[in-house]
Amino acid sequence: MSTQHSRSAAKLMIAPATFLLFVWMLVPLVMTIYYSFQRYRLLTPDRRGFIGFDNYVNFIDNPAFWSSMGNTLLLVGGVLVITIVFGILFALLLDMPMFGQGIVRILVIAPFFVMPTVSALVWKNFFMNPVNGLFAFAAKALGLQPYDFLSQAPLASIIGIVSWQWLPFATLILLTAIQSLDSEQLEAAEMDGAPALSRFFYIKLPHLSRAITVVILIQTIFLLSVFAEILVTTNGGPGTASTNLTYLVYAKSLLSFDVGAGSAGGVIAIILANIVAIFLMRAIGKNLDS
Amino acid sequence: MGRITLDKVAKRFGDVEVIPPLDLTIEEGEFVVFVGPSGCGKSTLLRLIAGLEDVSGGQIRIDGKDATLTPPAKRGLAMVFQSYALYPHMSVRKNIAFPLKMAGMDQAEQDRRIDNAAKILNLTDYIDRKPGQLSGGQRQRVAIGRAIVREPAAFLFDEPLSNLDAALRVGMRLEITELHSRLKTTMIYVTHDQVEAMTMADKIVVLRAGHIEQVGSPLELYRSPRNLFVAGFIGSPKMNLIAGAEAKKHGAATIGIRPEHINVSKTEGAWKGRVGVSEHLGSDTFFYVHDTGLVDDITVRVPGEFDLKSGDTVYLTPEADKIHRFDDKGLRFE
Image (cartoon, rainbow over all chains, first blue to last red; front, top):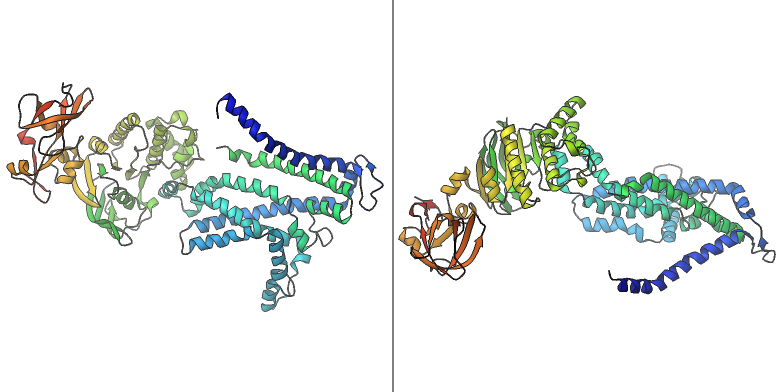
């Protein structure tokens, strides 16, 4: 691959794929930006035309927007905290030699393979349903009033569901990181008089910092666009209590048939994602250099 | 401080007995080397002393006190690991400070000990660097520094030089020996390299399959190995072991003669052979002599340069008083 000749041949051969990817990304982006400056409602398609920043102004002026921004950040932050804290605990647990280790590991990974709509429906109908759900059954067995999770604490319930889906991912990455820790380091720390808790905070946790960074970055990308779980459980309600930015864009463009406002929301979502990305890289990106 | 007694110490992993019950006393201030081929249980024995493995039987006493069930940190021993086991996210200073911090020592005393260790080991120039930025020899020094600040009753070294290149190994060997003569603390050193054992030890413990084959000073082991295993293991190049008719002449089942105790001549001698490979080191020359009718090849060491080529006929004469005789059980007798 080092000669001039083979390098230009390589460029030539990856050109079609690069071109396709570029078009794939660029065309929707340009169309979204184009529509965001258009007055384009599907109910009145004939009254189309350029309206400047009106779509943005209307989208941001909507009280649902600010609550959806807050919900988006709460959802991302909540799920990150839960998956990383429990992911580390699970990883420590799974790293210990025990009977049936292989099967337990597969069971822990399993939720990741369930598609979001299915797992959200299972949680909604089997667990959180105030009449037939398992939690209601347990509450009644204890003589308590069943709690209606999805209407009384909708965002917290969705955070719980999404955390359940992403916990296996975090556990898996952190487990492989823990397994790569040199056992002689732990033995050295033991000889140096560090009790178990100090060994965790001084040796294991610093060793995990890079893996934790990777988990945070990857999960943030996906958690900013959580949608299916909200659609099948709360529909963003009650009110806008569980509407995030992704769901608001959907509601604008496909429930209110306002393509222009939806597109403006999409562009705002891109900007938000970039702000979050810059903030994250500033905060934890240095963990990625060794 | 620093007398370690092993009393019928044994280690089993499941049904496999890695170390059968074994007695050993390590005197205060001694430099003891455990040596043996890989898998002989020398590292396991060290880990038993350190407390990183639980004994399956017997008793370990440190300075007369039973330490068999004492956790590693409370035994007052410090260990240097083969991989150095430095904490990669901490600076050299923090690495060395770690055991002191864990012991809850006050800052002034910590600083005094760290500076002292840094001076002894020439660490001062890179005390604020991370282990990743150091060379193998420097890391090795940091690992030793982390051990000496604890002022332990004894140091345990687990093959500490095996990850270094040959030149550095010789240098570090010297440094560790000097450190011992300066600190006068008991040191237990595990290696598979008999050269390290011979050059550093006050006392060598030769192990095979968990058994102690012989304990003695380097020259005792060289002059009078107790059996065939020790005879073959100690000394480089290896002792020539000859069985059969030639051994019977000396009234033994096997005789052993070291390569440096054979005289070489082009004209006359006891054994006639043909030179195979010759290795010229400048200071010495090694010949591998074939077709002697005794064994496949006999190794001979001649000081300085000696003009013999592959295929030349050569006559060998062993020095009569340097021949070791072994009985049919492989034990040496006079």
